[in-house]
Image (cartoon, rainbow, N blue to C red; front, top):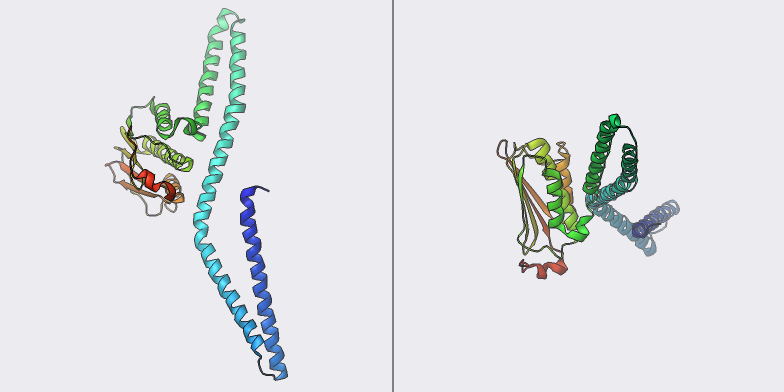
Length: 296
């Protein structure tokens, strides 16, 4: 069994034991009351204490269930994000290691054939080799999008810049990434959330907003890491509840920010573009150190 599952299962077994104890107290109290009622005896103090213990157990159980229900949506969102990242990393490895290697082997075989085929088939063989190389490049791009391995080695700014170059190089979008401070000390979860939110915003700007200009800003502040994404596209009407309105991309952004106790604000109007402001607060232990921005 995975170590991260041991604590939830332990807590679940403890709660189950308390439920059974409360049920036994209630049954014992009911049996005692029936016995005294049938025999016409006076109620002893021990039975009163038993009933009081049963009532306290029921009250604790109700309050515990209420807290569990209130925490369930946040826990579920956090678990879904972790499962999603895990699946993306798995799919990225499959694309890079398996399909990528097969395409590389096929390209080498076509190159071997091209050197031995007659001249009238050289053009067709060259076209096939070019198609395989383009497909291999697309597979590598998708693998990098699914699992940005460079986040750990290059950092958030360099990873975002590489993603923007790769995604927008064949488009007419004019873009800029502004970051005038070093971003060292940012946790892996915050870096991944900022990367995924930017990734989704860039995709929306290309597919739906038809934006011509895109500006992304990263800034350290005393309260946390601020991320700003602005485009001059068609704009839209943000929904109060993106998930219910079918705005899945926006809902995913909100879930990532909320999972890290952050905030996300979307400002958009039809024909006036879209602005997304995200703030990821510093953990308590690094809050004091983050008050002083690091100069470049």
